[in-house]
Length: 187
Image 1: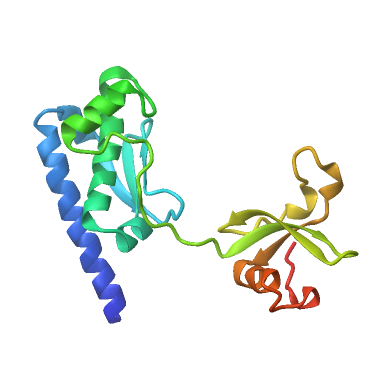
Image 2 (image 1 turned 45 degrees about the vertical axis):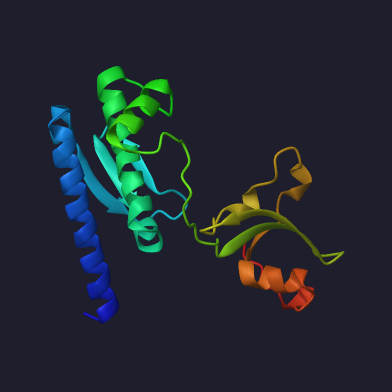
């Protein structure tokens, strides 16, 4: 095991202890939380999620690794507020009851936090090979192998013209540091 793996394991253990202490504090007031589990996932576009039907809270390991303890602690509390709001009032989302609970347990009563997100490695683009032009559509973290069957909403003529391009290559092309013919298009 290398030093990076050991450091990540120690960081995860530290967060698990933090989660356990938060959960223990909350169980005294909300005993139903004993039935809830908390785990980790590899999400990059969200910090956490509360899966009410599974009674499971999941926190992004990427979020933990790239943000401060104060930020990910708020995320943990935020997700527990969802669990409590659902158990007590069957409220889903960031409504007034959730906001009140979030505030009461120490989370910021906001639906979206301020935290670091990674840049997407891929860009979905619409390509015109005749005019050698590329239209940026959306950043993507994964490539969809069926993209050739899709088209942009309201633009059926784009079917077959959607591709994935490496974000770095697209940036070089847009800065005129790379030629159109040098771009690698993936479909």
